[in-house]
Length: 472
Image 1 (cartoon, rainbow, N blue to C red):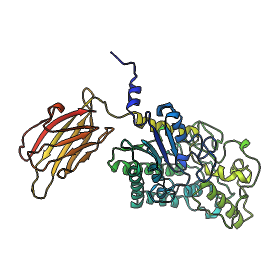
Image 2: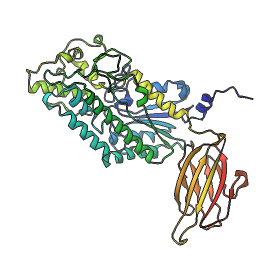
Image 3: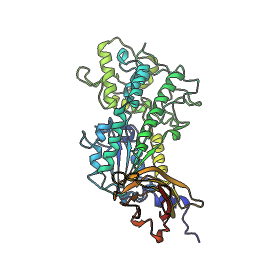
């Protein structure tokens, strides 16, 4: 007889995201949700907003009742890898060690590759003739993505987060980013939202494709690094597919469309009623401000002020006029959110993470494992090697993890990567007659244990094969 639970509910009960006691969100402005909803006081320096994906997740029933868990929002606008690294400035990884979170989310890398510089050079031209060349900025960012420092920085950020977490069931969900444009439509080819007259940057197919390609390459790199760590506690989460039909330049949209909520990215402003009349270069000191500030709003505001200070004869382009109606004290917050996800886009991030966490990617029950053990070529110095294949409890069973040529030092536990929610550990003995030992979620058994249906043959031509099982 059935227990009345839906298949999805069973998955939720098995999910690392279900009914947790404490969780943490880390990352940059895409995680802090700049512009999405209302600013959470104080707005600076981190610009956290009420409709960010972490805030939306925290109120979602799929995470359990809000009153039953603690939420630690440490994400901060302008963050780069160094702000995640343990011991780094305002280390977010170190915050994990101050509590006992079972789950954390992380969105990071966009600032490392220069998103802000790309928007200045390719879209808004805030810095007038000092805005840079779009093609060159895209090439610089691609070189950073391809370079070893990016992979090393992201690896350290993830490893530091995992090492600081004290909860044995800790899980980390690392997200990518979403491409900004529909690159195939025609009506955007003459769109220009550059701030200053004479510094146009049109949204041609080539420009849109160039920016989208960079985003996809960034996602591929984040995925490669995350999955390459081989840590079952860490999951890469793709968000891009959920933004389909919600990007700039969709077929049904005439850009710039500042108020269309079906577009999931912010233009400079969304509603004229938000702002009153003012000049965009007012409200900051061009002689002391930082055009490369970690805060996008402050950086863009400074670029505008310095460009005007350099040449007071600069005039605002007709294309930008709708987006500069603003009191000076409101300019930086409005600038900070450009090309960031609106609340709908933030909901997509939350949905992608829930999908990754709710679906355990295996059928629980009785899992099995096929093991091939290779004899040591030189017992005095070599280790045993193993080929491992793990199957879930489905009928017929599904392969949920494989590992080849696993080098297993004597009496040293070796974790085998799989889609299982807990570590599966293999330990080799010293000599051929020793049993191979296994550990999974409180179960401990060996290659001779009949309760686990262990059945291993004798060595033949330098190897032996066997099967075993466990509750999963």
